[in-house]
Image (cartoon, rainbow, N blue to C red):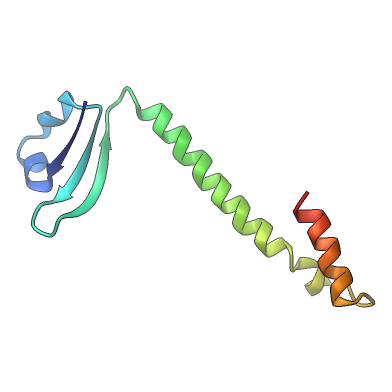
Length: 94
């Protein structure tokens, strides 16, 4: 079971969270989402999902930066821009 509760509701009665699988915590005054409470039963699944998502994001950022490493190291001194693009395309878009 899920719900959306206000920050004040949660701080006044923390035990209310026991009835839910997860709860979106909202600032009722500004209608902005402040966080998410996840029950202990779902904790491992959520942690694994978030760890994988963060790892994938970091890998994507690193892959994007690695495209330029060869240029900095001087690996492409004698090549034309078109040749470099073709090599990068072959390497990173397999």
